[in-house]
Figure (tube, rainbow, N blue to C red):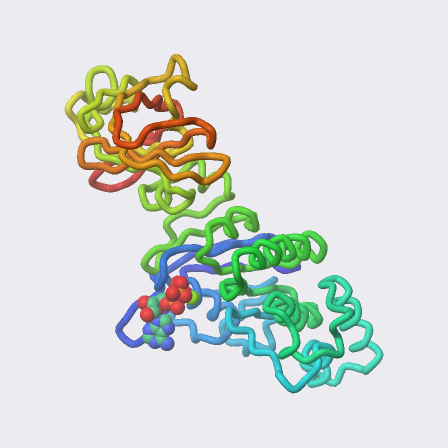
Length: 355
Ligand SMILES: Nc1ncnc2c1ncn2[C@@H]1O[C@H](COP(=O)(O)OP(=O)(O)OP(=O)(O)O)[C@@H](O)[C@H]1O
Ligand SMILES: [Mg+2]
C-alpha cells in the first residue's frame, strides 16, 4: 500500500493547457475516483501517474518516491484501460501469466499467483479458454486478473467498465469493490458514471476544465456541494437549480412564493440560485406542514417504485418525485411541498455556495 501525492500538476499539449496545477493527496489503501465531463483531464492525470505522459510541471510521488523521472515499469503500478486488449491467441492462464513470465519469475511462483487470482475472480474454470470464447464480463475479469497478479502497489483504472452493458457493469462494480476490500491497494479510478463514483469511492475528485472543482467523501460531494457545477453533477435526476428572487418571507420561484428561511445577508429583491433535489419535492398531501406551491404538472414519468413529476416554475423546468402508486394527472395544477430545510443557495455571479 502506497500513498500518492500529486502536487501542482500541470500538463501542456503544445500551447493547450490540459491541467492547471492540480493537487490530490491519496492515502494508502484509499479508493480515489476522478469524475468530470469529457475532456476535463481525467485520463491525462491518470496517464501522468502511470508514466505514459510527460509531466509539464509539478510533482507526483508514489510511496516515498517522487516518480517524475521514472519509467512506467519502475513505478509499481498496474493499469486497466477501457479497451483492455487481451492476447487472442493465448489462454486465460497465459494472458494472466505473461507479464510475470517476461519478468523471469520462477514457474511455480507464477503458477501459484495466477491460480490464486483466478480463484478470487472466479476464473478458475476458464483458465484454458481463449478470450474469443469468453463473455464481455469474463474478459474484463481477465484484464483485471492480469493487473492483479503483478501485485502492484497502485492500481489505475480508466473507465474499465464502460464497454459493458448495464447489468454486467453493476456486477463488475460490486466485484471491484470486493476486490478492494480484500486487497486494500491504493486505487485511482476514472469514470463518467456517477453511480460508480458514489458507490466505489472513499474520495471523489470532481474535475472541470483541467482544474479540481471539489474533492471529498461521496457524502460530502452529494450533501455539501461547494458550487452549482458540483450540485448539478451528482444525483439522478440532477438537483433542480433555479434562479429565484428573495422575498421578505422566502423565495419567489416563477409565479409561486415559497416560504422559507434564506441565508443571512440576502436581502429581499436579491437574486439567488436555489438548489433542491427532486427527492425533496413531493405531493403536498404526503408532506403536511411543508412550504407548498401549486404548480402546473406537465409530465409524469413512471420509474416503477417512484414517479418523476415534471412541472414548470416560470421559465424553469423542474422535477419532483412521488410514490409509484400515486395517481397524478398530467396537464393539471398540483400542490407540491418543498422541503426547504434541504435547499441549497448559490451566488448567481460566482456560482459558489452561500452558507
Ligand atoms: N495527445 C494529446 N494532444 C493534444 N491534446 C490532448 C492530447 N490528449 C488529450 N488532449 C486534450 O487534453 C484535454 C484532456 O483530455 P483527457 O483525455 O484527459 O480528458 P478526459 O477527462 O479523460 O475525457 P474523456 O471523459 O472524454 O475520456 C482535452 O482537451 C484533450 O483534447
Ligand atoms: Mg478519458
